[in-house]
Amino acid sequence: MRKGARFAAEGLWHTDRATGARVRQVTSAGAISHPTYFLQSAFLPGDRQIFFTSYRSGPPQLFLANYPDGDILQLTDGAPVHPFSALLAPGGEDLVFTRGCEIWTLRIKTLDERRIFAMSEGQLGECSISSDGEWLTAAFQSGGRRGLAVGRTDGTLWREIAFPRTVIHPQFHPLEPEWIEFSGDPAPRMHRVRRDGTGLECLYEHSNDEFVVHETFLGRTGDMVFTVWPRLLARMDWTTREISTIAEFNAWHIAPDREGARILCDTNHPDRGLHIVDAATGARRLICLTEASSQGSQWTRSRYALPEDFAAARSRSGAGEGVLSWMETPTDTIYGPQWTHPHPSWSSDESKAAFASDRTGTTQVYVVEL
Image (cartoon, rainbow, N blue to C red; front, side, top):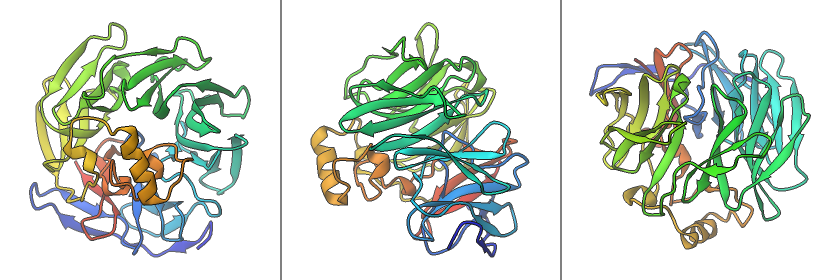
């Protein structure tokens, strides 16, 4: 199990029993495999290859599967990658991901790796890359400090932007790459800051009892969408901060299309499967069932976890105080384990959706034709 190793195709087709949609199970090895996080597409341009994280070699590493048929290529080895950090850089030739306190890029064709940025200690989390491909950011925790690390993809001009609470889900604005939106964990949740560290502000003041989660940009509209768990899917105007309701239902992880016209989402409590929601009208249609276990005790509630909840989770998982967030506690029962959640995302041409499911007892990568 090493970088460059190839494995036989593992895929098989089935027909969704609720909608009749064709679903491809991409992986079937006896180890956890899941696509990248719902904020990123897991497909390479042309939709003939899909990258994913797998524990089949032990700690999490990146792999590439030909789609719908073909072998599987191991992309990384050595120190474990952050299992939900990988993203495809603009241009489609490189993957960017984090390992420990470092950010790396990998050229897919050659498997050559280059370290872009490193902290002396701590943990880097999810990354985001600007639409022009020039800037990167990642959440960090190091020696009691928290915030965002921001710099150029060529390794220059890196800085820390401090924040007093845990930071997750940083995202560059799709139209104004000088702005970064990020989540403060727990509440209030939605914030923004310029990449030079100025202009830090909270976008929406709310209490711990309003469970705002999974905020992201509504495609090229530049507005934000988010869920108020488990009640509704909402939209925020980036300029005026006006909030409007798109639909009242238990949308969970949300992935807008590029134009901001449709929103792909999974559901939980109850699990109603994957849906596509019309962003203008709120009308929705069922795509397929995921039959994922979607674990996490907090999802039965309508508030964030409190500090004592996280302390108990760290104790259960043995993760220790260096944990950046629930994303790094794989056995956490508060918000996860994350690999039990579907986390749907669009394919490049938006004719398919990738998702994870542990319906077989082990999480695997699935693709549904839309």
